[in-house]
Image (cartoon, rainbow, N blue to C red; front, side):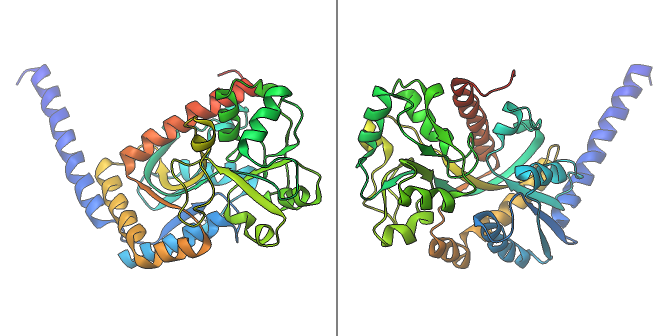
Length: 326
């Protein structure tokens, strides 16, 4: 056998051996406990969603250890599971992440992850005081076109994140100088909404379920939701597109991912287990009861989704003047 033929034969043997090893590994998953990293603290929406999902995934036969690592805005949790072995036994929450690299805080990109499945989307919504001067999203757009700095707008938490990015993207589409918009961080949506009710803010950006108590008390009104369609639980709230004609959507989202480099056969097996858990009546009912949206994308769809998230986040943050160099 020639030297060239010997090298080719060796490469072929290695390829076949790799395929044989990957197949049984994927077929055996899970054969021991799994760690699921949640990049948020206990008690919040992310914690609830992933503990509910984990309960259903455990029916595949192995315990799932849900570990909360919210430090650094979730950077610690992302680092934990993207640094793990790509064997399917350390998985994690994948939620809006592009801001970290754009702000120079971390280097996560789509390539840092193996997206497995999206399970939840909660669109951003626009809220005003019930007795305030603003009565609609149209009023807000008109005020910002006249003077971009005229309104006190709470991000519902950290700015340049889930709730304000889609709103700013919409204002950008309206031709508003978004670099002048007065965005105000808050210690969370609850704090921002309380300040809105007290008259200290003009607009709060967050999800609709978070406003239920204040809305029932007649203190808050939701004027638009940044979703493709009206929400089943809130059918009276118009979409931003209905009001402005601009098809801009966004908000927070949650999915399951692993570290980069996972074997496609293993990904397919885990995605199948996540899909089965997602489809259970208990998961759907639990999410609906808490007012959390259920949206499913498989691995390919989720990958395309997060690439679009990266592009939208950079566009908005560059327009705001807060982006670091690429």
